[in-house]
Image (cartoon, rainbow, N blue to C red):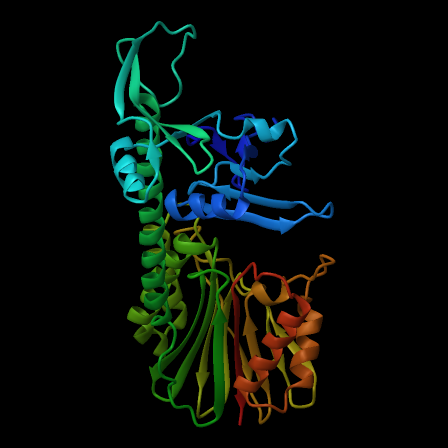
Length: 429
């Protein structure tokens, strides 16, 4: 049975190009045999078919079915009663044609396994004129000559089958095989490249934590795909100053990951400016990011500079979600936006704001992968649930708070993760 050239739907079934016609293909062909067990061994051992079904029906009859390697159709091996009309059909031509791209190779293989052929493969060619205006998709005109290699073989009961390799079908099989091979190779290369990209991006996140005497901190980024556009960093700014950064690049996947790497490199290379002029640093980062990306690319960013001696936090919120500052007395302050997003405009500036931190104060900076995680009812996790989780777990160290919050988000949104989840927590000590 030849391979079909019809389009494949997502479930592997054939579909009309307009997507509306129902699936239709040959499912089962009856082959009448005297002994199902002996016939089954012939089809499995000598022809190399697969066992598709072997079961006892409610009627007491046994249903045995085999399939050629491509699984295009089933052959039901039926043992009829000797007095039945079907029993007289045993040992006759079935009219079934098996198609292969190499008849000679299959002939030689099956003969070695004891299959009885009626004659050696023969080449036949027939001249013809096409009745349809357009040739079948992917097949070229061959000067009106059609042909192929043919032979016939019998099973143990004398049922005869044709084995053929048609010119057009052979070419089609080869094209399909080549297309499948190329697709599998492309998928393998893509998976390999994504794995490399994942490893490279993992190295862009902080590998060491700058020592800060009065601040304990931690961060995590759980990506929805192999790579993503969320970013967090901890920077040693020198002079007892520490930089905390979290960003969210618009988009997902490889494109967002490349922009994220661009942003991370800009900040790290230029972070020495932050000692005296953090606003100058951010203006420079914006200019480079704007110049190196297309007009629709942008990123939200929260940049904070912490002075270890003064316990002072200076920050710029560039279009990012409000950071949450939970004071030791359980009051809450939102560190709202002080400027627009990065990357959309070359002429851009930002404002800085500052807070003094006291013993036990906790700062949480996050991306929308946390608050916009939704449950089966379409309800978002939201800021209030995040604040409640921070309050309940504030006694934990920063890494413990992060783990507890992430666990709550995952329990709330149990289905597949749709966005990167990034959270940093800093606790004054």
